[in-house]
Amino acid sequence: MLEGAPSSTARWPDGITARLLKVERVPNDWGVDVAKSWAIIRVRLEVANTGAAPVPVDGAGYIHLFYGVNRTPADGPTGYAYPDPEEEREKGLTSKNPTRIVAGSKVVFTQSFKVPVAELGSLTVSAEPPAEEGFRDPYVFVGVDKVLTGVK
Image (tube, rainbow, N blue to C red; front, side, top):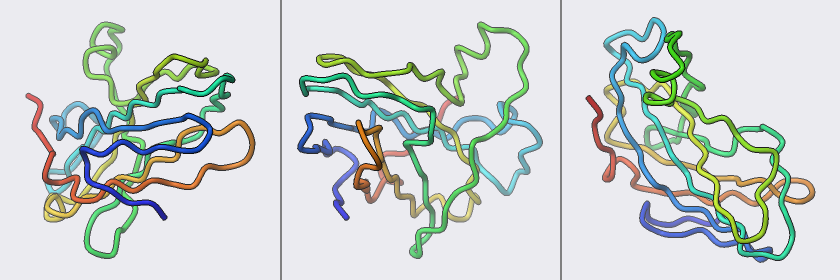
């Protein structure tokens, strides 16, 4: 398993790269029925295709958030309740993914998760961008809690 700092760029032999753009704690009222003892964490991952061929996007989860020293999987995705499309775009707890990433382009994937507030000091993100065939080996960003920011 490949691991690196939150500021690192993951690279795979086929020209796919991934980097964390943001890891943010957003207000609990952006989600549905999120207790005060939990936090909503929104992760934004940029995936670039520097290879020669398009890579299909099948809608599967490409971002996984873990908390604690034993890397417990965070619950996700976080549900939201805002009927206004502009509010949905602004808050963006999840992204509307394209069907492919063409050569020379970038896509930002967004996913949100619920994490116990007591565990915010130990966060890890695993990125598994789409692959032409099968699954890609994950890249794990460690120490993600160090780059966690807040959104109001």
